[in-house]
Length: 85
Image 1 (cartoon, rainbow, N blue to C red):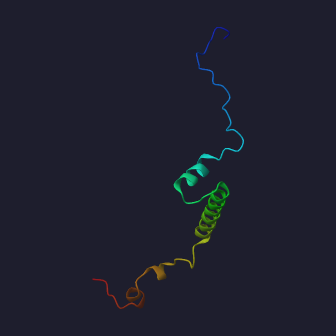
Image 2: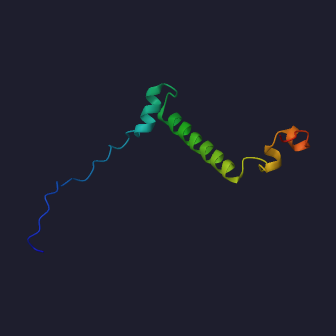
Image 3: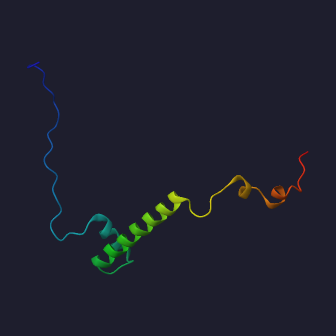
């Protein structure tokens, strides 16, 4: 087992962005022209995340009244006025 060698490249530690550099997403929002400052971009992304979480929870809970088979049928079928052929 001592004679086994692996010829894998060695990678260095990834470099961190210098302090004060906005993240790529914030830089993209800034460059799009939607907001003027980095703080506005952070608030925009925070609000987007909060809205996405609220929508996801609402959809998970049920998104309104439950869909029973009776409510999925058209009204004329529910009333029994449609006769099967």
